[in-house]
Image (tube, rainbow, N blue to C red; front, side, top):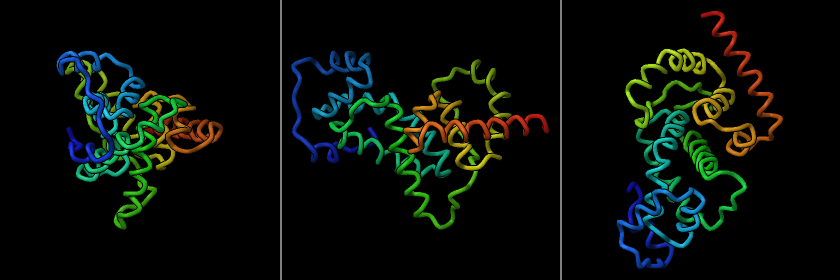
Length: 206
C-alpha cells in the first residue's frame, strides 16, 4: 500500500477481527464504499487497503490532470488517502465516497499548484492516462472519440476543463461537480453550458 503502516498506527488503536485475513479480504472486497469508510473509522487497515485499491487509479488520474506531474501526483495520492484514514470518522455521507475523494484531491492539487511558481493556475488540461480496467478492444473503440475530446478539452479554460473532466471522465452529476469544486449548482450549470458550447465550436472548426 502507498501509505506506510507507521502512518496509520500512530492515529488509533485497532479492533481485531476473529475472521481469517482471507475471509475478511473477500468480505471487504464486496463491501460498499460507505461500509469501508465506517470500518476505516474503526482503524481497519484492510478496509483502508481495499478502498485504496478500488479508487487509487481514478484519484491518481484526476490529480495528474490537475498538477501535470507524475511525481507530485503520486505524493498527493498518498496525502489524499492519509487524510481519508485520519478523517474517516468525519464522513457524513452527504455525497458519495468517490466525490469526497475527488474533492480532497482537488484541494490538495490546488495547494500544490500554488506552491509551484513555474505553473500558472489557469493552465489548460493537457494529459490523461488510460484506465487499466479497460480492456484492449474497448480502448481501441474509444480512442478516436476520446482523442478528439481531449484535444478540444485542452483548449478550454481550467475551470471549464475541470467540469468537463468530472462529467465525462468521472461520470459526476451537477450536484457532485459542485461539491468537488466548491461551487453552487447554478454556477456549474452555467460553466457547463459555455464549456459545451466551446467544445461544439472546436468540433465544428476541426
